Length: 104
Image 1 (spheres, rainbow, N blue to C red):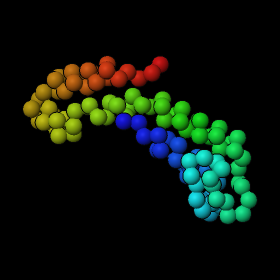
Image 2: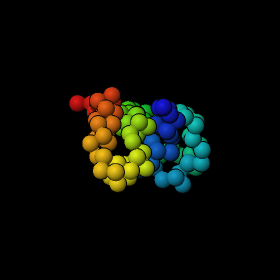
Image 3: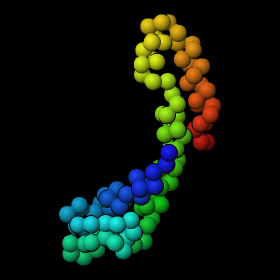
Image 4: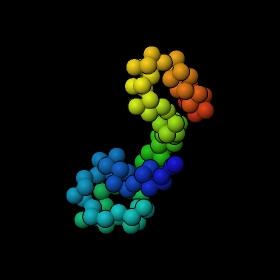
């Protein structure tokens, strides 16, 4: 389920540091692979710190991504409303929430 590339996307890290997309032309997955237009606009330490911050935020909401795959679909929700079966729908939702609890 987890996509490591999404959570460490260099463009997201650089954007989070306020580095303009015009300041670089290519970024691999590590600071050393960034091709700067002129001179580096951030430090390796700041880059790695921002990466760690974004990865932590990504990991903190893992339960949300897991819940999405198992929650009743919109079609199921509509049918539950139309069939006056909201109680069964809530039972399904509660089971998913119990399976993937929100971290404290």
